[in-house]
Image (tube, rainbow, N blue to C red; front, side, top):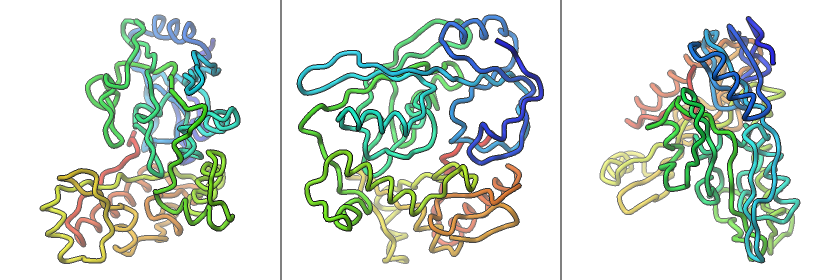
Length: 337
């Protein structure tokens, strides 16, 4: 294992931002990770996964530890279900496709989400009516200071909408090394109610979809709306969909009766941030090399050589414009570094 100084991070973040780590090392096993943590105990550390959920606004003056742990296996199974363990460095989408190839159901609605498996519990990632918490059993994590292993169960992760214990109570204390999911082997719960999935299936004359059909539909929808980070730098959805208390929403809804919304509980309503941004007139707007994507207003993009600061400025303009028009605050889903 070798620590490299002044390491370029452009290929390690999906925005394609030109930034440097003062020190960088990739680890390929839990033992290597432990060694790096022990040998560099007094250094400031920055843990890097797939680089898909962050915006680098400056160089990282720390030891960047790239989690590159690979491998997946079946832990236990019966006729109905199977428990799969994936190492943290596995690419999420490739892992999802692998589960579908085995006819294991539960992750298909989250196809084509960028990033690695190890960071999925941090955000409680989700798409098209599914979230990690729905199939998540547990994850193994290493305490950065003590190198002690700990297992976090589903309940212990305190999952919420794009929230978990790893973003709150134990933030920056643990490195997730592997994740376990319980998936179905038969009688799959096919979820087609969200978004454009039914329309995409109908286009292909599919009335009785398999998990593979649902995955293909989600991939087609995402590809039609979302830019490929390899071609146009982005981190997927930049903003969270705001959740409002019903009385607050109803006041706003009176002024904007055409506003789209989804009830999430008896007391709360979720409003699509993409709709708000589009109605605020920002969809497709470009500011130098940074901008709002033309097909999906939730996505901010790097058209070439935008800096992180320039993309951050666009995000603040979006937030300010939406708040001025609707009185609704939208938060960044992406981590600003």
